[in-house]
Structure formats: C-alpha cells, structure tokens
Length: 160
Image (cartoon, rainbow, N blue to C red; front, top):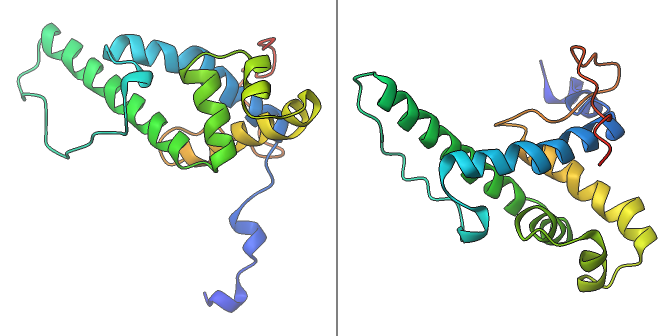
C-alpha cells in the first residue's frame, strides 16, 4: 500500500469521548492509587520514570517470587502512568498532576491555573483525560471508540 492511498482519518478512529473520559477518570481515581499501594511507591515522590531495562526477578517461582513480580509489575505500571502524564500538553499535565497525584480539588486546580469553572469542566479537564488516554494507549487501552461494545462494563456509572 502506498502512503498516497492512505486515508489518515482511518488511522485514528473516532473516539467515544464521553466513555473514554469516564474510563480514564476511573483508572486515575481507582486503579492508579491501588497500583501505587501495591508498588510501595507514591507518584508524588517520583521525578520521572526510572526504567533501566535490567531484569529484576529471579527465574525460580514461589509465592514470595509471585509477590515480588506483582510489586515490580505495579511499579512499572506507576512509572508508565507518570510517563504518559508527562507526555501530555503542559496544561493537561498540570491538571492531571494536581488532581490525581497531588490530590487537589477541582476548585483548587481552577484557582491555581487561573481558569473559569466552565472552561475547566467543559474544555480543559476533559481534554486532559483524553490526552492521558491517548498517551497511555501503548500500555493500557483506556480509549473507547465509536460503535465499540464495552464487554458489559458500565463505564460512566461511576458518578465521578
């Protein structure tokens, strides 16, 4: 296939923004804190992801090793989330860090970033969550595409 024959829009299918935002919010509010607890690291303590590429687990398997593997996997997941947040635009990155790492309220974020509540809730916060979902897509798929069935999961029923 030639590059001239490609329909670039087909490379990025239409997102179901509402469901993607709900899924990203759920991940950052529920899954990410659990990953931090399992990994024994807090994202607020990290400057940037530390990935040295060196193996960290022995090949023998027992229950202790399973716990170590889960902890290391959770640690890597936390690092990937930080990397994804850092891959967002400046405004989105600030919103995500303040909300989901520093645990500021929406009101404090609007004040800190000099945003009106309507601009924040209608534009900037949803955009930050969509950017995060795109940035994390190579690691964890949070995006939901138009016409996609959600395997019976009721995304959007979280009430957050």
